[in-house]
Amino acid sequence: MRPLEGIRVADFTWVWAGPFCTLQLAHLGAEVIRIESAARPCVTRLLPPWPDGQPGINRSGYFNQYNQGKYSIALDLKHPDAVTVAKDLVRHCDVVCENFASGVMERLGLGYSELRSVRPDIIMISMSGYGATGPEKEYVSYGPAQVPLSGLSSLTGYPGFPPMHVGISYGDPTAGLHAAFAVLAALWHREETGEGQFIDLSQWETTIAVIPEAVIEYAWHGTQPERNGNRDPLMAPHGIFRCAGEQRWVAIAVRDDEEWVKLARVMGREDLAEHPTLRHQAGRREAIESIEQAIESWTIQRSPREVTALLQAEGIPAFPCYDSRDIAEDEHLRSEGFFVELEHPEVGRKLHLGIPWKMEGTPCEVSRPAPLLGEHTDQVLRDILGYDAARIEALRRGGVLR
Image (cartoon, rainbow, N blue to C red):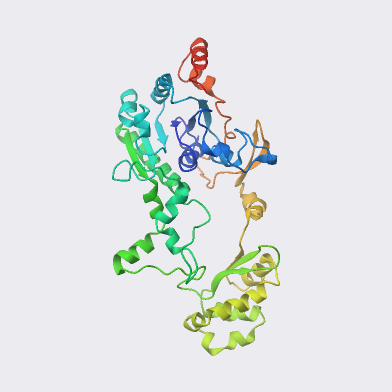
């Protein structure tokens, strides 16, 4: 039995942060029902990567990764009758998740007070960009904006250069994981007390939680941490070095003076190993640019795996900087069963990232691929809400189920 077996979630989320939250709940065994509409599809249904280069509303790799194990009903929430259907669904659910801008669910007639009237112990989490209160509560937010707003960009970059944007939208997965944990805590509280509750989550604040050291440094000392590229305040040398091949790199970290001597000798540079001013970290920091040039003149002649093997044999931390293919082909990840192959009705059998944890007593599994838009509309309305065929057909003719 999976941990959340018997828990049903009404999933009004879209894009990345919200679906990433409900993905964790689905992985844990919850029955997650996405409420979607062809009138305004989830943004990720319209984004690449496309399998075999063929786009389509059900073919996005982006969407299909983050919505594994879920169901989908087509419901146009702009239609007045759709609100009644949505409330009927919530009546049969334990959790409601949404990540619209603050106030959208209330304007749709689906705010917490409304939903609590149909299901008193409902747990509702709203994952807005800036929280449900405060002067910026109604601002629309996307994950990429959270990176500079959180201060993360101010820490990212090389000495002497401007702040840089990091490669992904940290705000999305960070908010999703915080939200999933909050829902689990609320379910525990309901189990203990019988009480539901409203959870107000700010994506901005969850992203700031990624960089507490930097915020504390300013709060305690009034100083801004320096941008230092891939260097480290406690280790030298420490960085990413180009290797043979197109965009192939290796990460190397020298933790102490002994590892530095070993590195220099593996590189065939006895002159560096024996150099008196480089024996200690302070001296190496003074000469860090020339040291990094010496390392790269050695790594550029070798593959990342060759460098890794040579250095790890000496106990020096090193590993290739993986690209997507390296990840997909990694022997360890495959042997661990991290990847799952799912048979999707439109795109066929494809590899997906699976569940990154294993639970001994309550093992989890990916139960099904991401749903087609509206794939389970009739099933949910019939089997969960108890609607008969005539009512479902009337709703469809009326443009509610689209």
